Amino acid sequence: MLHGKRILLIVGGGIAAYKSLELIRLVQKAGGTVTPVLTRAGAEFVTPLSVSALAGAKVYTDLFDLTDEAEMGHIQLSRAADLLVVAPATADLMAKMAGGRADDLASTLLLATDKRVLVAPAMNVRMWTHPATQRNLAVLRDDGVLTVGPNEGDMACGEYGPGRMAEPAEIVAAIAAALGGGPLAGKHVIVTSGPTHEPIDPVRYIANRSSGAQGTAIAAALRDLGARVTFVTGPAVMPAPSGVTVVAVQTAHDMATAVAVALPADAAVMAAAVADWRVANATGQKMKKDGSGKAPVLEFAENPDILVTVSKGPGRPRLVVGFAAETDDVVAHATAKRLRKGCDWIVANDVSADTGIMGGTENAVTLISDAGSEVWPRMSKTEVARRLAARIAGALA
Ligand code: C5P
Image 1 (spheres, rainbow, N blue to C red):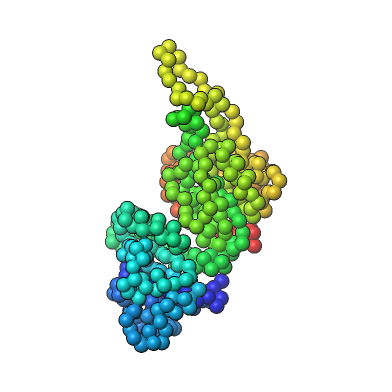
Image 2 (cartoon, rainbow, N blue to C red):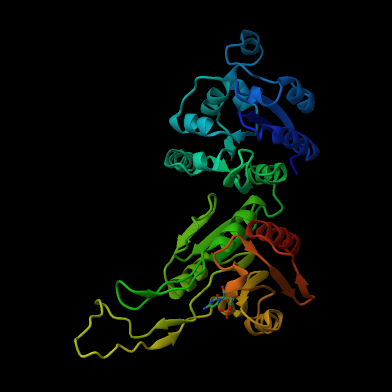
């Protein structure tokens, strides 16, 4: 997967630095080579000796080491690689990168490079959610820096939330995707996600409880396998993932148009909770009480079924995946839905209130195809997304 690829790995200071040792091993297993760089703080968590022994290469630690400058200057070092990877990327390192600072070897390499940079942030949840870090992240993404993770979970500091460094295998997948080598490289996938908003008047609308979490995770997982992703999203709570083409829409109609424009594609994953009905007598002005005590009557018109249009229309992608959010007889309903809608697979889930799935972080799905139904255990939406993306890669291979 990474044959002949040279990775310059910058290991920042954080408890996740120990995972970078595993990352070195996995990059090598995938056929790549690693030139390691340890920041001063990174060297507090892993020793230069263990890093260099695993990488089978000299570890670089100090910008002002004259021998190194004579052997290989920092400019050359930053350009000899195919990709720069920062793992773990601490809040401080990200701040330095966003500010264009160059006061040690790592930050100088990052500023001097002409190659792409992938960062795997790892920090305490409060540091991650702090507006300063989020601001720096936005700057880095604008600058074209790629990111992988952080994941949500228990943290070494005892807190829970986003901030855990992505697992080494995920970072390797992101490296492969960044270098154009993932299993979905060259493939275009359309993902719909989130709810739709159907206006009643200029200030009111009909919506649903979809947070967009599952669709967002699927788009990110497909991107991580190298796909070019067009992410058509209704007004979701979850921010759209980086590294995908985002088309933000409000209504089912807008979503249908955006999907039609995004075709052709190799696959389409329709995870959006599209409103089946729109208000046919929506008004251009805000509705007002007229004092008569008479409530307005809303009339409804059926929305286009985007999944059916894509499944049965011209330019059908090779693989079309629909979702079925049900509250009873999940598999029976979803199996019938697959045939009715004409899609290849249906990802069915039970969204009854007591499951906590709608708006939650976990999902329990059944994958229905012409081969039958396959029950997946309850797992995080991120994990569902990864598995589904891997299956899609298999189907398109
Ligand atoms: O019929 P139902 O809404 O349960 O079907 C769910 C599946 O159909 C999802 O994949 C959803 O994204 C898709 N859908 C659609 N357009 C609609 C309604 C549903 O693409 N108007």
